[in-house]
Length: 230
Image (cartoon, rainbow, N blue to C red):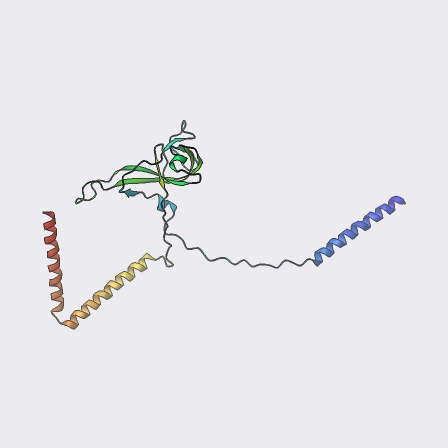
């Protein structure tokens, strides 16, 4: 009998707890549904990172002493390095290197020659852009860095330069180059029609005089060019 009373008391307590739980849920306010609207589309860039930082350039200034990749974490087993590889530099805090600093990896490919018949002497050095790295450990005269972006495989001996600030323009809303070309041709036709209208208004000899003036200017330019060549 005592056991039956104990079970009845336990059952009554369980029912009371359920009733309290249902009451609490009924009193709590229902969450307000939220409607997520899609945000405005971000305009696209004309060129991506590879196009901005992998094209190479011609440097007119002579290359002075620059930090250099002189070693790597796995240099006994590999000779080329790419994204994520650890490399060592021959510059440290004494040369102004700081932790977290980013550098561009470059490789001089030789002086530019024979691209213009009328220019002589030094025209610049073609610089191949290899990639970028970030310094994470700096000592007095050495540093450790991780390659973060590559256009081509990096090699021991590649030089480091500050990362240039380059930003791609945004794509036009229409993005239609053919439309731009058609508008340009249309403007040219309108300009030609306007000139013909002016010639007719000024008289029948105006177009002929204008043509004579153009030929005279061309002859003067030719004579000046011959004088410079002589």
